[in-house]
Length: 203
Ligand SMILES: Cc1cc2nc3c(=O)[nH]c(=O)nc-3n(C[C@H](O)[C@H](O)[C@H](O)COP(=O)(O)O)c2cc1C
Image (cartoon, rainbow, N blue to C red; front, side):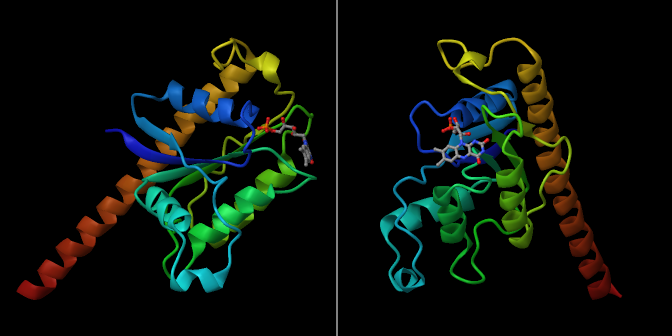
């Protein structure tokens, strides 16, 4: 079974290393993860007034994330925090109140940087928002990918063999298993609750 994954990348840059990491991670589990990068660069800055008649970009973004089974955030760190474009996208998807498209969706957060801290600050700011939005966020393995550069990829944008590819491979398997565990557990709970309701009816 292939799970539909919305990838949200916190960099708009054409040659983004984070985009390449995201694509590589999905390619590794291409058998079971059906991934698409959701565009966030065209989203107008979130303004609650717009929700009365939302712009088409909000509608499209909310639909694409809403239809996914899980969300993979892959982002750089900007000034030790979450890039503004990504925070804006999270805000857009989280509203109107009570209609967040992130609610209950299993997620993972990966940050990549040429620096040695691997986007730790951004990673935890994204995590804070995701946890608040009621997303079950994969805790392990943690994914602060440091020393990532254009050199980490071949001419086709695929990860070269080496320790980084090994880590991303581990992450890809762990994320697949995480999504499966959350979605299957939910199905079992729903089945169990339906079974109990039937039992009550017949009691
Ligand atoms: C505005 C700005 C702020 C940055 N701040 C940080 C930072 O706090 N920590 C870090 O590791 N790298 C920082 N960088 C460097 C980025 O990690 C680097 O440009 C990276 O390649 C961006 O990711 P991308 O290739 O996916 O666009 C910053 C870059 C920019 C443009």
